Length: 195
Image (cartoon, rainbow, N blue to C red; front, side, top):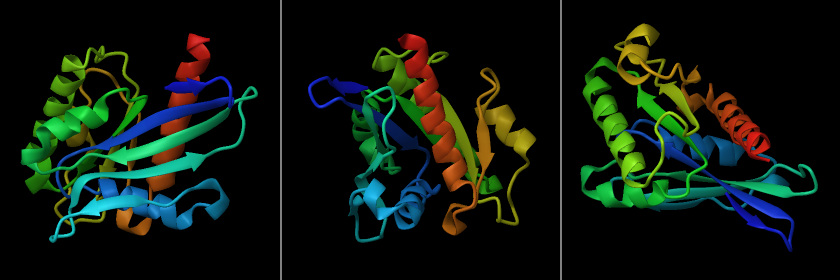
């Protein structure tokens, strides 16, 4: 969180994290497409030739005023490809809330677990307490025939914190705004507890 007292603004950083092709960028594209144009700016996307995010997606959202301050939520995604490990750590720096986007397909469970464990290591290296960082899970691709059960996803990704979670089909916008709203509420609840 960055506060600008003179302009009465608070910037919050929301990072969508997950394995490659889990739907992180699709979430931001859906949010951008369906939000009121007055409440959002342009979506900045860097992609490779294969249409995968190279560094990050960025979408600032204005949600009005809270206690005389104008909060802005800056949404980022991390690149999923393994050779961008250091970039993922940099993007997590100064994060206010994380949305972990898991791919619900059976064949992607090992990728989900690997990305989740890497995220925890990055947070530890950045000095975050794992049990205190605001985190929401999104179980994406719930329309796939080979999806695993919610119980299995919980067992692998949510065994020790009972994190809030949402099922989604990001390509159709299902569960996308519910996840975003929960992440914003989590940030604002955290802010109220600190003040």
